[in-house]
Image (cartoon, rainbow, N blue to C red; front, side, top):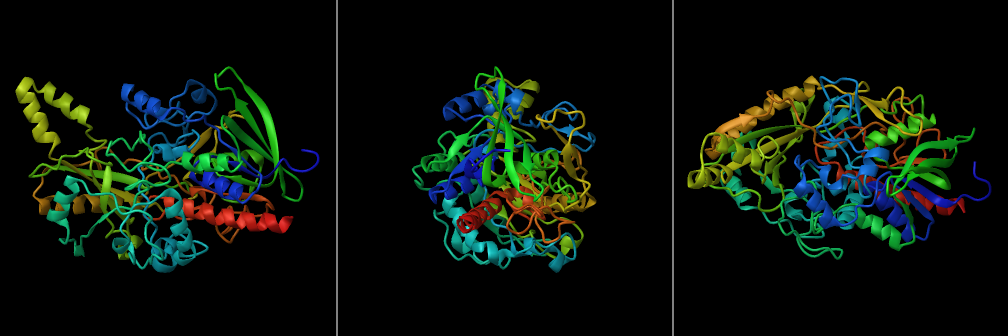
Length: 554
């Protein structure tokens, strides 16, 4: 235990969007802030683009490959075998399919950039549908923080399109006008918008995005590079390095390559210091270090956060590590009757929100539908289209013609289905691991609640393709099972009962005086939208709570 005064007012573990936003806001208020992250600095952004271009696999982790990081702070990869990758899969026949990035800036480095809000119903699943749990507060409590998060990240959207959706009012406009629809979006909207599918009217909206449509925060507008996943080469798409840089400029002590593995706490449940290993940039070794603070915030992602708590013996009687959730996905692909010319702009610009809430939530998962601007996406990337056509014996002008006829007509729809919290879907420490090198073991299964939603999604997509006159329709479910969305939530859920939750509505760990959790791990339910904006709103709310509390402690 450190002698004398704590080293800092606040120590934050994890420099993703939650940790970076909290660090920037508190440092700007004049507080002494330490921000630790397990991963390295991103470095040259164009070099990262080059690593992706030179990669044979073209996976989201590829631009951020780092030999030393892969040794001391590995990130999971989508093609890792179940028993040999960063995750130890306790259920290898039903693997957990989402990844995250342990690099300064976190998973926002390769996130899609979509930032819709949760619906009011997403906060009230028990009250409205008799399933899962209610959040300890509703949409209206978080609404002002949604506005602040949109301003902090730089969100582009159409206020009138989104104001009132599902009863969710907007008190402020978006800080930027919406991203312009692609030609394919316009074609789909002309053929599908206003149709009645399964007794539900279809309305296509431009999805709010943390992507500049005009210059913002000194960053340029989107140039349509179509490489948002895994990296925006010009940083028109927001990532958390924006707030890491703000925190640094305000005096925050930012330490990359710092892998935290334990929190010490006294008999009064007050955390006194944290322990971490700082690994060298050249990968030659690591050095044990420690730091103390008046308040600690764990914002190390929904996989790593529970590992730190479990390894520290914190909240042992709570469901820490349980209720792991994602937005499980499926795809429908077809060829449109006219060219849609994909790959011009972000991979997703528009979507359909009609199935995000309704009476069906008692029977199957609700979901958002995204309209792809990336051909057939993961099921058939463009290089596979070319390879398959070459394999038919085509060559020269005939090959070019065939590629053009197919690639320009490809359209993709996807559904992202909510999961219900299930304690048996869990993260824990892998047996036999080192106490200072924490490896997650994951138990995960596909619920019937989601598979029934996949069946519904397939049926809706077939009807939509028919309404648009599309041909050669095919679906990933059930042939290739499901995909992960990278929307990893749960594992340290918030609530009022310490027996069924890990932290309270402010993110403070039950029974701990000065330990807070930030990030999507605190979500009691998964909601029906990408989690980034909601976790950012929660982080800003927590930052102001901590500033007030620390002032009261003086």
